[in-house]
Figure 1 (tube, protein in one colour):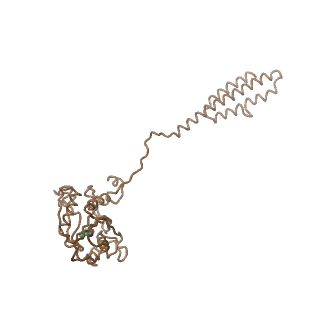
Figure 2 (cartoon, protein in one colour):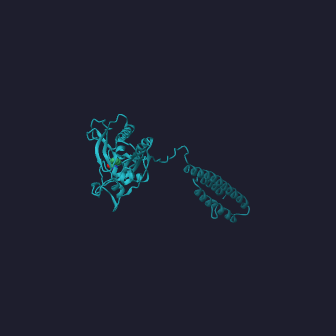
Figure 3 (cartoon, helix red, strand yellow):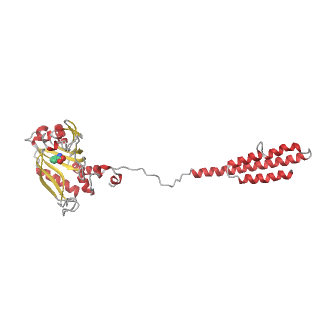
Length: 338
Ligand code: PHE
């Protein structure tokens, strides 16, 4: 029986040493030291041995039990430390990894170009003005001398909100809104969205204009021409050629359209300028006295000029953008380029 007890010690110690996790260790403890464990069994069996042998075997069994118990405690410490280490490794944070950069937004290309246009006019003393996108027919058409039977008022060109109310088709109604409230001298620029029933590679149902209006005593067409030429040279470079072409707008008289030499081919002729060498960028003219009558201005005392720039067209020219649609699809691959 003595040998049996000793053999139990070595198998038990070996088994404990081999346990790979806390669970296996607990199984080993139950197997040897538990209530139905092998050591317990032996200690219980001592009642069957002779009284002489009993103390010797009892001592030996107790020693083996203590040895196994110590081994289990020691093994537990090792396994605990291992488990701790594993947990630390799996939850570790690498502080040397680069952080995630927050995505930063920026101004849309249309707003950038609008600001650059306005800046030039601010330097000349113009102030900014604004008006509503949803506009009455009175401000959008009638007060600008666009008669009721004018083709532009047709529903094919204009978005009607309800009878008498439209999405403004140009920024010119803000001219009237400003003049109603202010006596000359007036010098304003008006950035804004405008709407027309039109949709192809160079037309969007919503696009952007910058309107200009200057009214004072003694303003002439030469002032208009000088101001716009200065603007073109500042914005597109001083080698850019400028051409004033006679045109017609009901609210200006005389009227002109302004072309600049093609920024792509420098006037030699290319696809962008349709081989003409010229690009149209704005409409302008001397304010029609009829408009002053609606505004309540003294038509004998005051003269002035107005112009309307196409911001989208200018942005497309500056950045060689092939389709106006790109400006409004908000595809990040496009938007992020500017
Ligand atoms: N409102 C005109 C347009 O949208 C442009 C313009 C503005 C022309 C001011 C003359 C004076 O086409």
